[in-house]
Every structure is written in structure tokens, then in C-alpha cells.
Length: 227
Picture 1 (cartoon, rainbow, N blue to C red):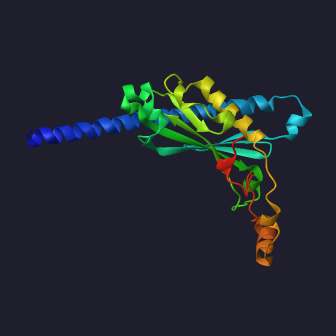
Picture 2: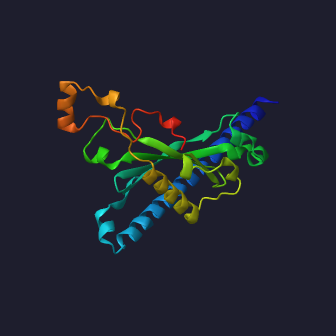
Picture 3: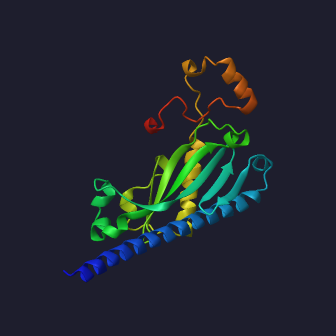
């Protein structure tokens, strides 16, 4: 192979990989837009509920930025955050063993949208030490196929990757699943021994800025929450 041929091969490989990642990026961004639209529509529908009780409970959507969206309901806030880079699954990941990926390795490159759950009061009172939880990760590839890695209601099996297309209906399903999971993911009282002592400095700081740390599973490992 001549130097010219080697250089051409190098540039062809570069363009191919970059084009693939650009397509994955575009699909991921479009998927986030679908999620944003689903959240906005749900918020609009909720506002039309003719119920005094519902009017007392917030259900609002906010477009935080091009790569972030926020859905606030009751005492919880869901934040959807798109990573701007493209990733590939490790070779030993189960998804790499599926026929869908084995038929076309390029399908293993995915964009990621992370779904975080925070207590709304953490933002309201600027409790910067509070804990948020990653409740799900949405993976989207070049075919605009997706699967969700997450807890209970929100987690879809990677085996659906070959057939699950990101569209309006599935975006709404993801949002609804995240809401269902969140409203059933309750705030637990931390172990008494973890909170029985507080310094004067910590107490004064807490009065000033509510810095006593709060989280739904504070004091427990979230990974061990298998229910």
C-alpha cells in the first residue's frame, strides 16, 4: 500500500466515524426534543384538570437549555440532561451480544439522555448539599432505536433495542414511566444515628441556607434499592 493509499484510508476512516457520531448526536438531540414536547403537552393537559386538589399540586414543565429539560410535580423535579458526546458500549456488555448489534457494530454507538430525580425543595431553598438520583439513562443510536437502563418502572430490557423506535408515543411512555417511578420513590427517614449529632456551625449554616443534606435514600445505597 502506497503512502497516498494509506492517507486516503486514514481520512476515509475518520470521515466514516465522524459521520456516524454526528448522526447519533442528531438523533439524540431530536429524541430530547420529543421528550420536551411530551412534557410540555402533559403540563398543558394537567392545567386543564377541573379539580381544586389538582390546582394545589404543581405540574410544570421548563425548557432549561438546548440540552436540558425540567418537569416539576408535587414535591419532585425530574431533570432530563443530554450528554453532548457519543459513547460505545463495553465489549462485555450484554447489548453487544444481541443479533441487532452483531449484525452492524455501528449500532452500538449511542447518545445518552440522563434522567435525574431531585426534591423540588432542594432547588426552592437552594439546599446545595441535597442529593439527586439518576433514575434512568436513555440510549439512542444511529437508527434512532433506543432502550432505557433504569429502575423498576422506567427500565426497559436492552433486548427491545432492535425494535424500539424513538417517536412521540414512546417519548410519552418514557415520561410517564419516569413519573410513576418517581411518585413511588418515597423519601425515607435517615437512620437516627446518622443525624443525632449536629455541630453549632452546621446548625447555623442550616438556618442560613438549609444545608442539612436531604435525599430520598440518604443513608442508604441507591444501588441496593431493588424493590
